[in-house]
Length: 154
Picture 1: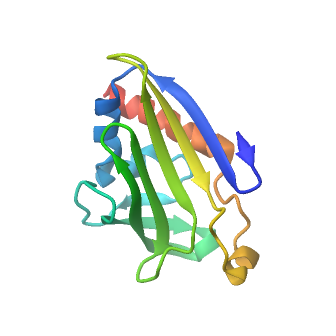
Picture 2: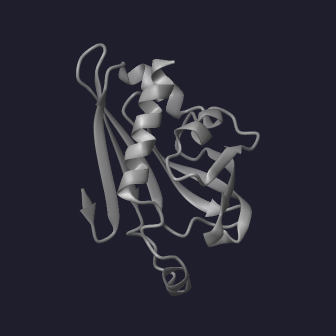
């Protein structure tokens, strides 16, 4: 589903919400989950455990002139239910785009996974001129769900 300021995709994955949440809360997994191709790897981050945690990722993309690092500020955390963060270039405050993973258990071995990329809180006019949102397509988000399904399957 696409709105003027967000893209949401969803899929049922045949694993428990706990198994999926375990994969999502380990930043070391994010490069293999990423369907956009921007995430290169985790940068010395611990497992995500609560709102307020910050984890760093090594990234690469033409939109940033090549290699760069992000700091991801956790804005939503509910064990086996939700994980959300706002991304910022390292050393800066998040400008407003957010990634939200929502998990709805459909039984002991089935979970509806919803991934939302939302840039509705971006108010900086320079960023809005510079970045052509959405920077990540619906298909790339679908690819992230496929990558998650593969990762949790082992």
